[in-house]
Length: 180
Image (cartoon, rainbow, N blue to C red):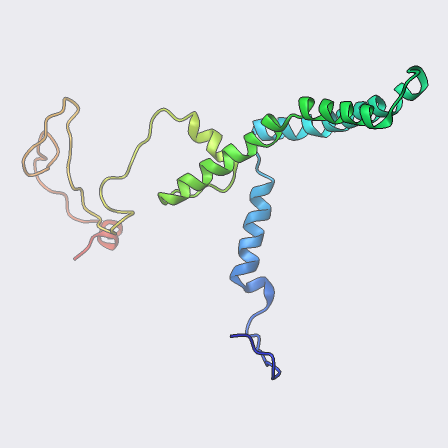
């Protein structure tokens, strides 16, 4: 429902810089500056290439007036537009940023967030990933769940191989992190 009859009064409880929207805007502005190398190249390329192509199209439209005896503006404008369509770098200028946006969007669907396309390029180069499988990060469980020996052998009670001679007493720092 849209209020069209009375004046609405809104009380602001926080400054704009403290709102979620301002933080999201700051993150987006920060991520815009973090472009991948391919995106940076395409931006530089388009900055030079596009004005050159547009200038050539203008010359293709106007220059024949001075050299062709039966010059028809409409025909030469059509040829210039065809030239623009053929020489358009849309495949590069549009598809590369869209590819990065698609990759970031696909990752966010499965819960992985990237702050910029440069981080997506870094992920492409990773060949080994080490995970914390103890549950410390995900569940807050500060205990070893399973130990796998170097040769692939594990003990049924998930203790290190070979077993320690006797357990060491908890130190003050270990007591702080151990659950009771």
